[in-house]
Image 1: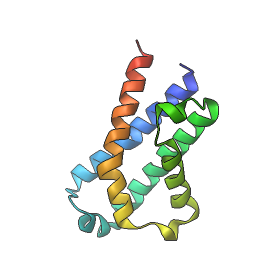
Image 2: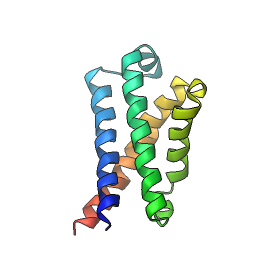
Image 3: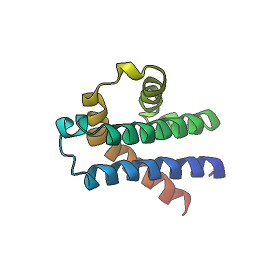
Length: 118
């Protein structure tokens, strides 16, 4: 696997792990808890930007990753919303992403990284 792509996959993994750690450290268990912690929201949004940018770079370098990570377009789209349409972000949307979609992405990335080391 291309070294740059592998580096970006590790960036996705690291940012995702940070989000998980933030939620666990602050005992955030609901969208209401999430909404009330401004600093945490900003940290999570920043890590989602990093994930989106890394995925964007990966698919620009190798468009077969659109098939390998089927949610690539949505991930990149979320990054664009966070950066360019920040006033269109709802706390419920971000909460849904980190609780339902991020764990799946983390599993996919771990498999890809593991397979690249084989």
